Length: 142
Image 1 (cartoon, rainbow, N blue to C red):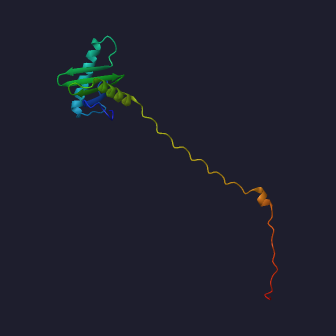
Image 2 (image 1 turned 60 degrees about the vertical axis):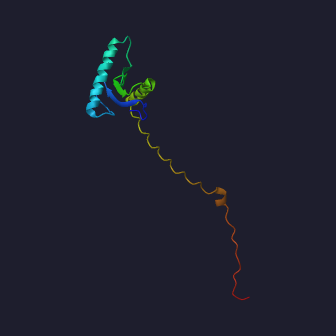
Image 3 (image 1 turned 45 degrees about the vertical axis):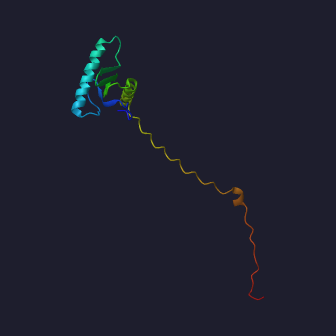
C-alpha cells in the first residue's frame, strides 16, 4: 500500500483477480469480503461499460468505495462521505504500480582496486655514489 494515502481513505485492500489478498488495513476475514465484493462490483460495472473499465467509484450517503484495476491486480478502498476522488484514485494507482514492480536487484559491491605500487627510487639518485669524508684519526694527544 502507498506510504502516504489520501486522508479520506478509511481502509484499503490490494488483491489479485481472482481475489487473493496481499495486504490490507482490515482484519483478514473482512478484507476477503471487501475484496470479493469489490471484484464483483467491478466486473458487473465492466459489463455495462462501453470500453475497458480501469477504475470505479460507488458512492452512498455514508461514504464511497473505490476500485482500481491494472492487469491482474485490483485494489479497493473505502472512504467517508464526500472524498477527494482524484487523490484517492491517484493513491490507489500508485499502490498498484508499486505492487506490480519487480524487486530491484541489489547492486553488487564493487571490487576494491588493487593497491598501487609505490614508485621506485629515482634512478639518478641511486646511481650517484655518495662522497665519503674521512677525518684524520686522533691519537688522543692534542
